[in-house]
Image 1 (tube, rainbow, N blue to C red):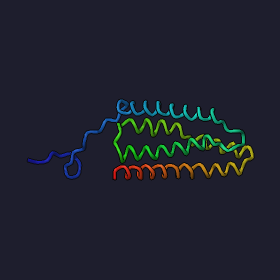
Image 2: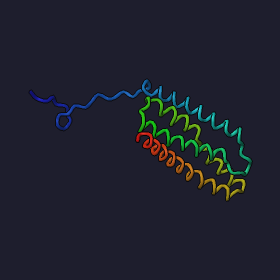
Image 3: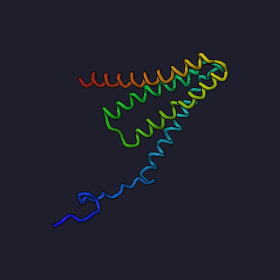
Image 4: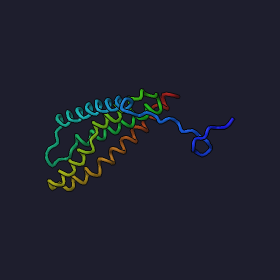
Length: 154
């Protein structure tokens, strides 16, 4: 018996193309949109509760970014190292809710306004502090979550 000719080296047949159409992506798009709206609404509510004064340090946006990054650190440890989650949990909560809650676009706009208002020192401090604090918070939160998990397992 001979291997059927396929035109490929070694007579290897190509696998059928995987369908990744709208049907498989629609639920993901829907949960990201739902989560994004939820996260953005929460951030907007925070900005109404703690408004930033013109020319002042944007503490609310800064806090939302730092807290959101800390939560994503814990969340990723939980769903990757503790317990696998349903395939829509990560897009809903990680990409949607936390992506909508954290706001690096507003960070950029706030920075621009600070510079435009002549608040160069505040703008530079905000420009440097936000990514530094956000990266530190995600790292510390993930580290703390792993440490707590090890403690619970022993």
